[in-house]
Length: 155
Image (cartoon, rainbow, N blue to C red):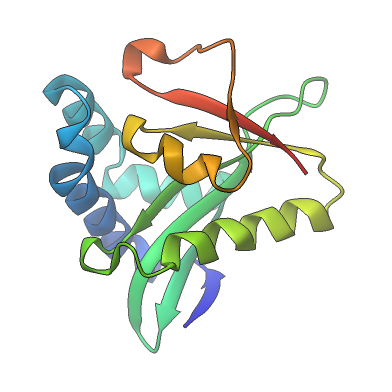
């Protein structure tokens, strides 16, 4: 398997990964309203638009996409907030190290760009996953109403 930049051809599969993860895993930890909101926010058009302003990657084996991740700056030039986001792996392949491979990939990109602080907006079920990399829960939680936990890691 290799990680490559996502293209328009990957959008439908990325949406499917997001939807199935929300239905099978995230819905067990978040309210129905939040799950519905985030599924709607990750429409085919929204994912297509993200290809233009985020670095979106897929974990591919031949033509099959097994996972996805994004890397972007949610901040400003004055206050950078480099973040990884939208980490989703095929539900049938959870626990096989694919998520770790995706996160390590983005951490390497961030380090290669001289970024010294990396953030992640985490679903409640993924907090422990990100803690394994060294992310810690931020004191300030601007997206608490959306049940999102912001976490930070020094690189």
